[in-house]
Length: 106
Image 1: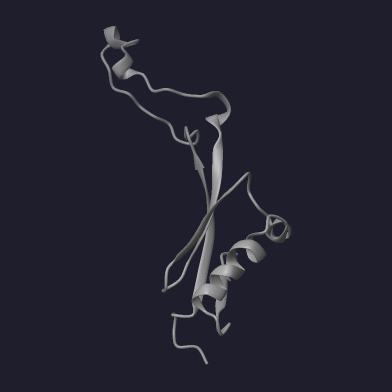
Image 2 (image 1 turned 60 degrees about the horizontal axis):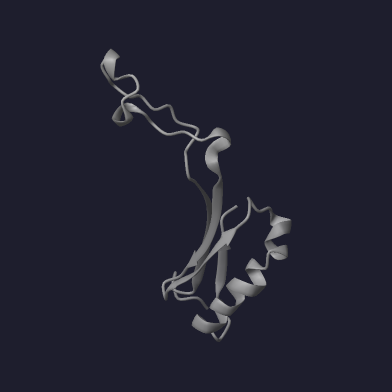
């Protein structure tokens, strides 16, 4: 029925932060360079914000890239319109005979 991987659409989401807060940054400097702008690393309280991106790909093409307001759960997946408003049109455009597998992570 399916010819290998060419009828599969994969999707995933990932958060991107403006200022990573989970890593320690080391700056090597001389004592007299303590406040030299070249030796300072900018930081922002509370992480400085982030954006969640969702995208889908297949062997035919890359699908839409969507910006989400926050992390999504399984129940949110339908509520934000990803399946109906984004995935379904891509499936209809690239696979009009509906012989497709949609594979989302987790």
